[in-house]
Image (cartoon, rainbow, N blue to C red):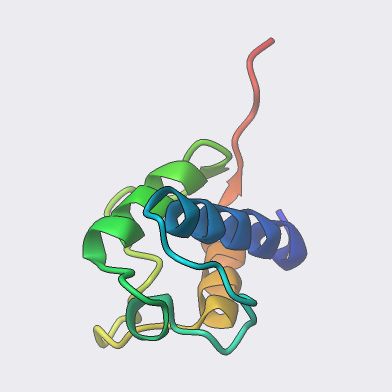
Length: 94
């Protein structure tokens, strides 16, 4: 799966979680760090987004896409880059 597809899924999932939580959804650009820049976005929200992504993508379930290897919070752009490298599209069963 290419980066643009992953990016689109990621942004849609983050926006959905923010809306469901009653929080505003501002422009979600590549420089935003969800864990620190989005109002009320916490570790539970990152888990919820990860579960949403796993509906369409396959990647190791112990991967936290929101944190770098050093534990630092990643930007949306960095998350999309990382997932594009380690994931593939889940095959839909018809």
